Image (cartoon, rainbow, N blue to C red; front, side, top):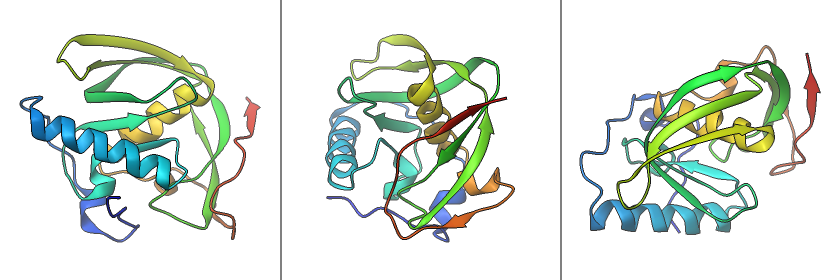
Length: 160
């Protein structure tokens, strides 16, 4: 399992560099990130969270693991406030307003250009993980951050 960096680690505040080439090393890192995400009982993980300042995200919202290289939000719509937590900010949570639906373009494991449109947990996960690539944590968007001893809890949403 890779070491998950915690809030205060400078790598979490850097803007990650694009992945220049999807090679054996990049694919190995993605595979290790997926294992680490599952071990930590997470939904998503960005490369900066494991100390690699590159634009790589993995997640699984229930349909199996997905790997995204160089993802970019290309469209968004609506607004939804939901509870968010993060493996890099253990024991904390906040209610964050984000677009309800997002569209993301990215390269898959084979280097193919892909696009996904997500709402609900997928939309939330995409935005949260892509923020990590820009050196942002969900706590930066929070009006108030709450302390909770639970490692993570259910996702709750309130439309606005």
